[in-house]
Image 1 (spheres, rainbow over the protein chains, first blue to last red):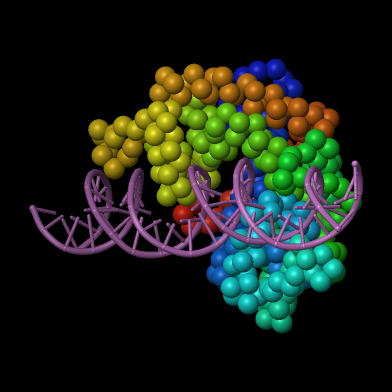
Image 2 (cartoon, rainbow over the protein chains, first blue to last red):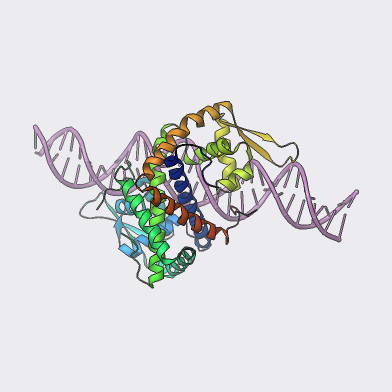
Length: 161
Length: 161
DNA sequence: TTAAAATGATTTCAATTCAAAGTATTGGAG
DNA sequence: CTCCAATACTTTGAATTGAAATCATTTTAA
């Protein structure tokens, strides 16, 4: 059930690939939401914890940029994690505009416990593709994503580096 | 900036492909949200209009299934479109539980005008990949998506048939 | 036929999300 | 030094979401 659109071949091809890409990512996300929800985390919250886990404390701005989320959204998600004592904020002494977000000991324990399960689930899901296929998929997505960021958007903007 | 995770090679490979897939689809979606927003439509609303445009009137259930959205969500999005007189509901006479959603003349004009622009924008974005690459990407995503739906989820579930 | 189960839609609730406006802080130009 | 623009974050408003509960209707089974 690809595109139901009639038009020039390049357009049909592009729409077709686009729809399949969207469906795959939505289906994948849906498959992960269930298990994550069962431990009481949303994908957004998990993303924050995971990023802090792998990269260490970050400012909200850096977090939002890594996760491709707007600033306003980042604030809210961090709010919700802070309410549950999984992360804490500390205003930077050098630049008092910045807020550094860090994992609490509780948050660290949490993500240490959850992440392996999450990784295993992703590995299982991606197992539908052979190793070379996974690599090729990654390569194509990376190429596409990078090309798009050269003509980027306002607030969510991902300046490189 | 791939996975920052150390682990068995298959796991690193899967996580890496996963992240790139997610980023590509999110970046793509972000690139389309701006223009769509400027004409006053959210991606969800656009999805409903487009689906009705290409497939004709559908029940809410069918709509939700096509768009991989929960029933509750479908109701709300259709509510919002109905408020703007872009679609209308009609209870099915044969099975009075079902509600058929159709485009109004106004909705039809709207989607006829918007869709070509949207398609052009997608075509342009996907232009970052060569034609064969687009096809390969589509193939891989389709394979992945289909495999996932064999072990699906509850309410959004995509029962085959 | 009647009771129970299943189905389609809706409502409710909490969280996410973006955009846009607002606030505090910093750093630079005059 | 004093504004002023840029930066980092927060708030507000509207829409999207999924999950779970509810209601009406249909179908099935006893």
